[in-house]
Amino acid sequence: MFTNIVLLCSAVLSAYVLEWKMVSPFSGEPDVNQEVPLKSNNNRLYDAHHGIAMGVEDPNCDDAKVNLKVDWFMNPENYTCYEDKRLYAPKTTVHPIHSLEHIPVSYSAPHKCMNESIEYSEAIPTLEFTTGLNIVYCLSERSKSKYKVMLVDEIDIVLSHLEVLRGRGTLQLLSGTHRPLWAVYGEYTFLPRQRWIHNLEHGGVVMLYHPCANKNQVNTLRNLVKSCLYRHVITPYNLLSLDRPLALVTWGHRLEMSKVASEIVVDFIKKHALHGPEKTHRDGQYSLMLEEHANVVSNIEDSNLCPNYENINM
Ligand SMILES: *[C@@H]1O[C@H](CO)[C@@H](O)[C@H](O)[C@H]1NC(C)=O
Ligand SMILES: *[C@@H]1O[C@H](CO)[C@@H](O)[C@H](O)[C@H]1NC(C)=O
Image (cartoon, rainbow, N blue to C red; front, side):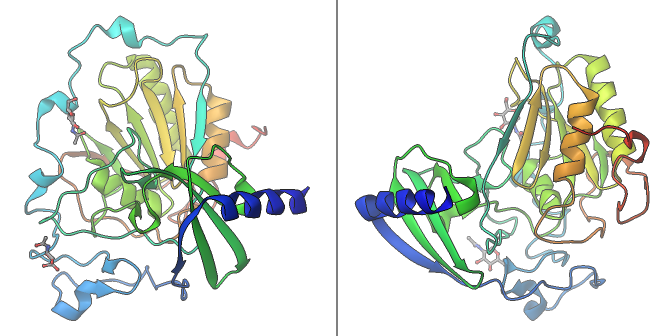
């Protein structure tokens, strides 16, 4: 079975190779738990993984205070319901959708300062492909230190264990680009995605709900998330669909829902929380419109996810 897929993949590649690139090896995890001083000097602002170092508050780049309107105009439209709420009512006939992005092990998401905007092409970016050609990425993982990356044109195959990626863009544009400073964990009146994507990278779970979503459903989901882990962010998000106005996002995974099924939610969190490429529970720095700081559930590392739901096994 595996051999067949390798052959298929190679055949597809030789027929459609446009270009290939080497991605530099991932050279050891940075010590992301260390404390960083409030002010930086210039050489602290750069790191080999992201370009611009994370967690360094620098008014010339990002201090989570200056230039925040680049990500969000602070417009109440982003957290207010203007439509008929009945359109967003829970529908028992609409099943939840779990979708995922296959993220290469060596991928490191770039950081951008607040002097540049970051655009996303997907409504719910997790790790995001920026706009461009439709391309299939075929990565052969022969050794962990080297990736041969083939860009293949418009082929509809997804072979997950070979890390074949389908998406838009070119590899150097493959990006979960976000801000160097991430969000303080907790619930927000509104939090822009350029911040919460960084929390995903640290293993956090982001709960999104449409401002018109049913209040009881939002409460049910909120209570589940808050009782499952400390490392969560909750924010309204008006780009969710009418059919599925509720969503959970982790690094590479989304769960979009019309109606909350607690066993599906708990299972999703247990399987996909804490799998970001950077393991740190350190709190973020951005707290504009934070309503409530997250509480610790099991411990600060979240070593026991959803402790009240031990019996849920799917
Ligand atoms: C934005 O600021 C950073 C850090 O000060 C700098 O390295 C970068 O070149 C600037 N980008 C633009 C587009 O000006
Ligand atoms: C705010 O809402 C507008 C209108 O739906 C949308 O175009 C914009 O992308 C939203 N902004 C953010 C930061 O989500």
